[in-house]
Length: 47
Image 1 (cartoon, rainbow, N blue to C red):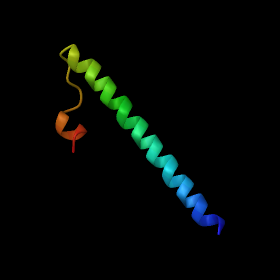
Image 2 (cartoon, rainbow, N blue to C red):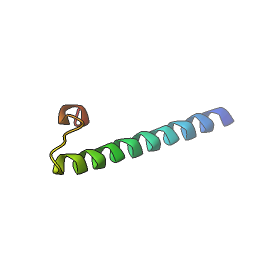
Image 3 (tube, rainbow, N blue to C red):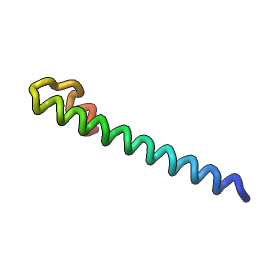
Image 4 (cartoon, rainbow, N blue to C red):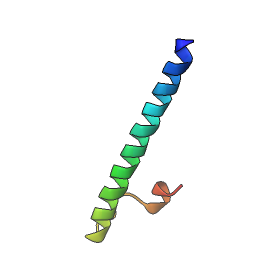
C-alpha cells in the first residue's frame, strides 16, 4: 500500500524538522550563554 510509505516519509520529515529546530535552538542558546544572556533554561533543553 502506498499510504504506509507516505506515513513513513511524513514521520521521517517531521523527525528531521524537529531535530533541526532543536539543534538551532541549542546553538543559539550556547551563543547567548557565552555572552552571559541565558535565554533557554538547561532543564528544558536536556529533558
